[in-house]
Length: 272
Ligand code: NAD
Image (cartoon, rainbow, N blue to C red; front, top):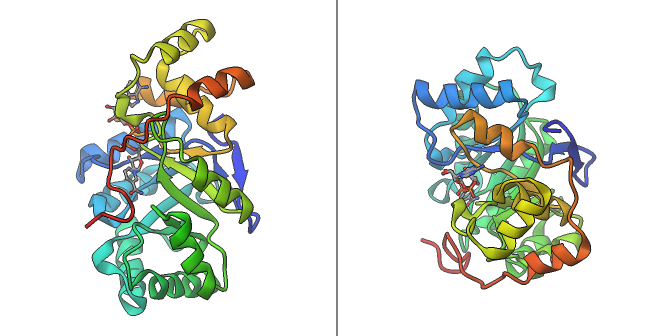
């Protein structure tokens, strides 16, 4: 169910499915979407300072009667906030907006060249000071991780990357598995772009599941955490209901073979 967790390399549990809130409204409407998800059973919320909705997430967290220790809140330091001192200040701003006294997971949103290693040092300090339970990165290719690991005292617990059937990220998943870094998929259902795909449709019919559920199940069976976004209660429920069926190895291979390399977001070497 929505509170079942993957164990990160420092022993912290992170729910297998969380709610992504990119493009969720920054006002009361956003808070309502998060509250609905908490009522549906979501325990993990993925935001970022860049999404400009940490305050709405904070409102929902304040209003809920779900105990703090059952919640798992992720936020991220944005590109123009990177550097050692800048990141420490950005963390304080995020925490103020979220209204939390500790965070569950803090991520470097993108590997800003020349900055991400200093940013990582700040995350390590926040971790050692007990202000965050786990730290990680996002949009890191193996070569970024190699560079980071040269200076890191703490191996990132998580790498959050774009992943869906068109971009299956086999090389990053392999690298992360070797280094005990948990992969989290963003745009895990590819924003609905290939729900019409013949293979996905056939498997959905065979299991009496939706295309979104088939794709999220494929990621789960690859050991990948997902954070699908939906503002609608029935879709939030649907996206969380992926634990009662299982794809065969052959079906996993079939979905693997849908890879084209086509991206939704920027390549981590080319973002601006
Ligand atoms: P997604 O793959 O989660 O798709 C979301 C969209 O698909 C929704 O807006 C909705 O239109 C549709 N949808 C959702 N559930 C559906 C269902 N069951 N049936 C039919 N349609 C459905 O895409 P996303 O929002 O880009 O990614 C999810 C989260 O990942 C974001 O909200 C954000 O938290 C995170 N993210 C991170 C980065 C990063 O750089 N780290 C980048 C993009 C997104």
